Amino acid sequence: MSYYFSLCGDSTSFWIRPVCRCVNKKHCCYTRRLLEKDNYRIENFSRPGLTSFDALEMTWNKIVPKNFDINFYSFGINDASLRSYPNWMARKFGGVIATNLSILDRLFLLIYRFLANNWTQKQMSRFGFSKPWVTLDQFKYNVEKIINILSKENNCLIIFTTIPNVSERVEKILKGLNKVIINYNKVLLKLSNKYDNVVIIDLNKTFLSDPNIYIPEGIHFSCKGHNLVYNKINEVIDEWAVENN
Image (cartoon, rainbow, N blue to C red; front, side, top):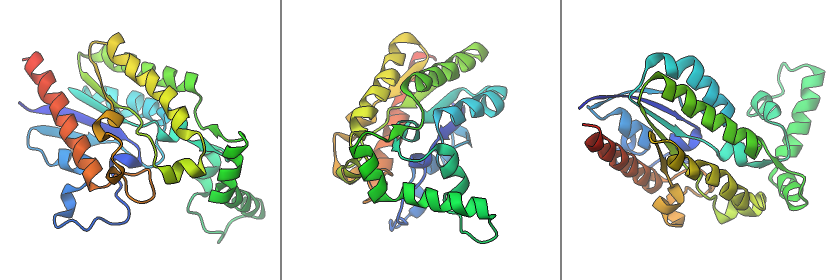
């Protein structure tokens, strides 16, 4: 059976860095593998840096009007991440070169680079000055709003992944991040009991603390990590298809 399928995730859903050296590179990322399946007609709304705010906006403006059978979401790390700089600053100055910037913007760029430096972030999180970009209450509101908007339109399957714990390397820079992630995941895990059409894929159970599911930087998945997520998504959809046909 064919399904109309939406994907909405952050960079963890499609980035493998450094470039994968697998023989068949196009089969590394789980979103790319899903896009190649014959029985899925998929539209991919994923983008780097996506938060629950972005996912909610995307749902309302682009996903709801298309009436998908399956809606898949994978975000949260950008919501929960402890940052010493505001989200707007990262969006405006991330990857920007000082060329052709105004004097004021150059000043903000210098401030951003200082705050985004690993050493600065480590010190800020160590002394409790770093905060999540999206509060826990707001994250919960955004996720439930997404579910309610979609559920009013049709009896679709809605899949969320939990936020996987970051590696030891990242935890050393953003001290306490994994403890924060636990609270955000509690919000997600409760949803499957509250809504019949919602399935939560617990990535920490899927990965079983295997360090090889990450690339060296400690947040984005390796080929092994992407393969585990791909298999779990198909397992969830196959079970849902059996129950609904």
